[in-house]
View 1: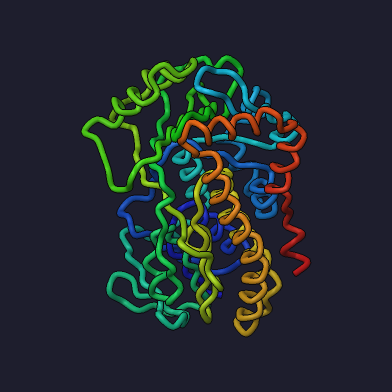
View 2: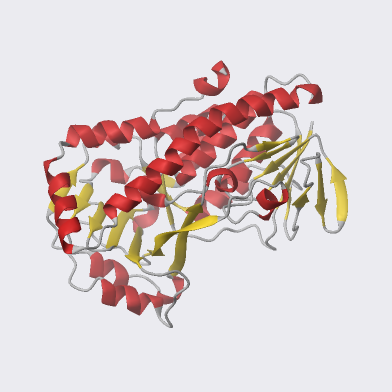
Length: 381
């Protein structure tokens, strides 16, 4: 079949590669003029690798990632460094971290030459018909996959856009240029209305992120200096990580998710995938994982299609499978964020006390419930 994929992020790339390897003629349309990707660190759990392995991409991603975090002490700390919770190591044994740009380059290299077309602001039919307008020209396809991110203009064209909800906080992200000793520990530190997280990357780099409860739309002349000010006095190696980061490379984003879960990801022969379908907050660490699960599910279901006449049935099964899981994940992520980002003195004291008495085995089971997914779910549908 001839298939258009709109958006060359992680979801669009994995989908395009999987479909292309299965013999489909794939065109990958990217709005930006370059094929690079921006961003900082990325964490993927075992569900992501189960999906990637099903498409023959697991080792490609492992080659640009590290499992060092799986052997470190991890969990939640207070700003003074005392642990609130410790995550059992068997619960994060599958966890790997990488730089998003390294992952992007590795995936782009798997595409057949000529597949990726950059500088194409592609528009899907508002009725979900299998055609796309790109570079001022209408092109016909058998299937259109919309993977153009949480701000997807094509979701709106399909009449499926519920709008975006500001989650109440801003996030800064950075990667160190020099080696910083993490002391054998990673994870997230919870303060009052602010967080700081850290994770090792390949080549001795460290990814960090910082958050602050604040109104949307703000900004500072020097975001690096602002983060240094906000987290001054926090436990080591927070200050060391910030000093080892190029100030010009610090990214700031208002965190948003979809205002409401979508009722469907399908409109005729157009299908939403990834953040375009279920953009969620990062509070569960499953945003990228759900994107990759989407891609694998669609590719595996398409393997059962005998021709274009089977596409509606494939999309119906994809819709049923992915709506159920991703809706639950979006709402759980939102609830987790509300609990962890409390800022009042009494509320944070209660939050920390609850976390201290929660057994590690309970935290491990909760985490396992999030990553409990295998490609067999798509094959059984």
